Length: 311
Ligand code: TXA
Ligand code: MG
Image (tube, rainbow, N blue to C red; front, side, top):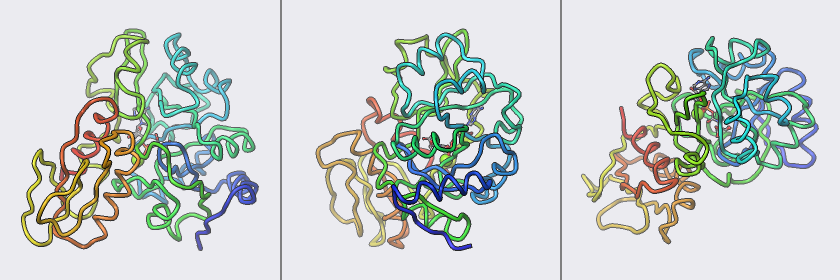
């Protein structure tokens, strides 16, 4: 199979046609690129797992074309409705009790389903034309760095999917916040662009417990192939050490990527995965990543870096 990168607006019709034929296609979202397929078709969803080499125990996020799908796929609590009202479309994924219509392959057999609505205009356009929910995990091979532009998707999934819809670079650059919503409160399963402070106003934030932690929340994830270590004051180990810096360079590194020269955490998040990929491709022995402030979206960046460092 040859993978084609399509441009909007012309490519949209071809993308919708492929989805109707049960094929998975890569689409831009405001967080990272997703590999989307018909969420109500177990066969179409199976092709997502196959293309990503993703284990079947790791459930998929379902993206809704419109809010009226929320009660069709889940049992939303009043808090869930309030969160949807405030943050959708946008980078918040809610884990809620599922309805029977959701295929088991999507939820990995769990009684909950993860749902969100993407704010990316091209994703929204495709979803509306398709008219049904789209299951869409990040468009990378399992365990690898999420793609934040069409070229990244091609390097991950070339010859494994028919189409990539090019929507340029992703605005946030890291995956959505995942929150488990229950009557007693909210449990953050993955940090992201919607922060703890954003969520606290809606319900008490509870400690996550293992039984509901994201199955994809494996300790090692988002990993470059080059070993990565996380340090407060990075130092080079050899001539073949790369630096992933927050705001400024340091002496003695073979390659350097700076996430945000002006120390802007949102800019750092948007640049994170592209910078990790470039350093990974430099063919060095080690990447030393500098710790960054854990305020706001900084917590989500540090969560990604810790996972990239865990082996
Ligand atoms: O920003 C995003 O969320 C991107 C874009 C494409 O929407 N999607 C994304 O999907 O990051 P993925 O599959 O790479 O990560 C989804 C995570 C996985 O770790 C999975 O285990 C978790 O969500 N998840 C899915 N369903 C769940 C459920 N019912 N309960 C707990 N965790 C769940
Ligand atoms: Mg992923």
